[in-house]
Amino acid sequence: MQSGPAQAPRNDEKIVIHFEDGIYGFEDVKDFVLLEKGGNVIWSLQAADGGFPSLTVVDPFVVTRDYRPVLTEADRESLGGPDDDLCFLAVAVLRRNLSESAVNLKSPIVINARTRQGRQIIMENSDYPVRYRPFGGTPKER
Amino acid sequence: MLVISRKVSESIMIGDDIEIVVTEIGSERVKIGINAPKGVPILRRELLETREMNREAAAQCLRGQAAPLSEAKILGRGWRESPGKLPAAGGSLPHVPPGDLVGGAGTAGSAPPKGPGKK
Image 1 (cartoon, rainbow over the protein chains, first blue to last red):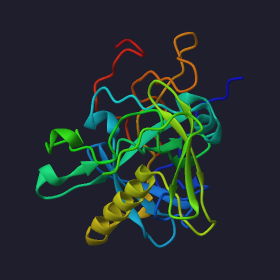
Image 2 (cartoon, each protein chain N blue to C red):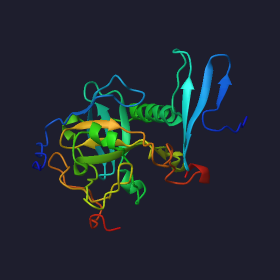
Image 3 (cartoon, helix red, strand yellow):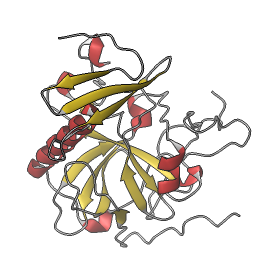
Image 4 (cartoon, each protein chain N blue to C red):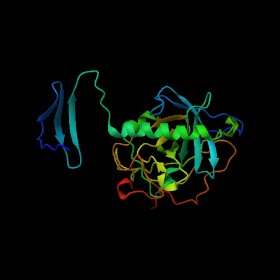
């Protein structure tokens, strides 16, 4: 069963991504939009109404080229769709002192681009750190 | 840190009413059962850390300037299932370059395309 590609929304269309469970720490907020912040690498994931919370997210595959997220069957079912509809983003804390910046590779934001359903998934079967330091840090945090 | 060695089905008591039972031991992980009163929160540590990190990421955005909603786009990297090569549940998914996931009139990711699954 193959459905066509998700229709490309017009540029002025507000694309709302629904997070049934919210995201960790903001469980009550269910609808988000993704705003581009720069270079197709950084976005903010922002509450669709009112704009709070708004989290910085980055492309995890740019952060670490060989990123291999591992989803369980249950995770994938919960996103309801084939894997090629999924896109992955990672929550980032960016600091002026770059070595203090961190990217959560353990718990990616996974969005089904077709259904516009999203979830933040804490990957059980992966050893990625919650605070990956792309610009250095102690070896332990790597 | 107190370190205690246990076999399967043996348990540890913490206080009077919290019991930790080792239910299964594998090569890489153990399964643990916990009996505790309803009011005691039990969380995987990474959940707590993820929550903390989300809040930090949100706090820093408060100082930033929000872009207008009209700029909203869904962008990211696409993933494709390659039948036969895909490991069983729990295996990692092969990485492919961005596909048709892009919303809005923008262009796809700027990274050079890589062959699907050929890594």
